[in-house]
Structure formats: structure tokens, C-alpha cells
Amino acid sequence: MKKGFTMIELIFVIVILGILAAVAIPRLAATRDDARLAAIKTDIGTFMNAIPAWYQGQRDARIEQAVSIDLAQWAKPNPGVESYTLSIDGAPCVTIAVWDMNGTAAQDSVATIGAGLDINTSNNGAWGGANPNSAPVFRVIQPGGMNGICATLWDVNNGLGVTEANISMAGRRVQW
Image (cartoon, rainbow, N blue to C red; front, side, top):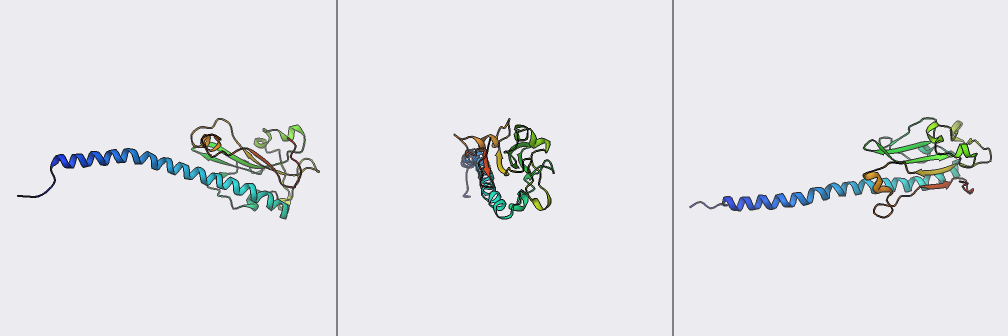
């Protein structure tokens, strides 16, 4: 007589493996998203510390001089504006920027970042903001209309709790 598994035993094993796969695969996808969000939050924390410190030491307002930025993830939408935007699945998720927020109300408006009118970095990144007495401000900006993984990044209750930030790069109070 041959020894082996019966058809019923094999079907039970296949059913059990199917149940395990149905439970494990979605959890693995969620773990991948969690890791991606943690990496983004780490990048933002690095930017928040490194860029103002670089400006203090070098008087250079260019983000790409202060940190090694992954241009495959962070895009610079306008070459004339010192800002980078991280998009996930084609939707903007977070923007980091250097702004002159101590100028006039028109210069401080949110619309100026898209128009490329907010800052002016001259030769070698020396600060040349609209107001000669102003200081650059490093900003972490939340775009509107987010969903999915980006919404999780900014969700204080259920996500990682990233918040918008205005950080003076020259030790002056941010007026806004």
C-alpha cells in the first residue's frame, strides 16, 4: 500500500494557507506604507534642523546646499523659488520652503510660493529677501485636498502628527 496524503488533507492545507495569505498580505502592504511615512517624517525632521543651522553658519538660504535631498522624491516645481514638494501617487503631500515672511502682507501670502515671488537668493545663496531687514524662514507646508497616505502623515490623531512649521533661520521672531 502507498503512503501519502489524501485529497481531503491536501484541500484542508490549501484552505488554511489561503486564509493565512488573506490575512498577511494586507498587513504587509500597511507595514510598507508605515515605513514610507516614517521615512518622510524623518526627512522633514532632518530638514527642520539642518537648514536653519546651515543658514546660521554659511548665510546660504539654498535648501540643496544644506542637506542632501533625494531629487527622485522631492521635486523643485519652480527653479526661481527655494521650495521642494514631495508628491505621492501624483498628489502633493508636503512642501518645504525658504520664505521671507517678515515682508509685506503681499509678500507673505501663500500664493507667492507658486508665483516664485517670495524669495530671492543671489550669488552663492546669500539671502536677499524682499525686506532688507528681514530674515529667511524655513517652512513646512501642508497642501490642501490630501487623501490616502498623505492624509495619514498629517493626521494628528491617527497618523504621525506632522504639523506645519515656521522656523526662523536667523534667530528673529517670525511675524505671521
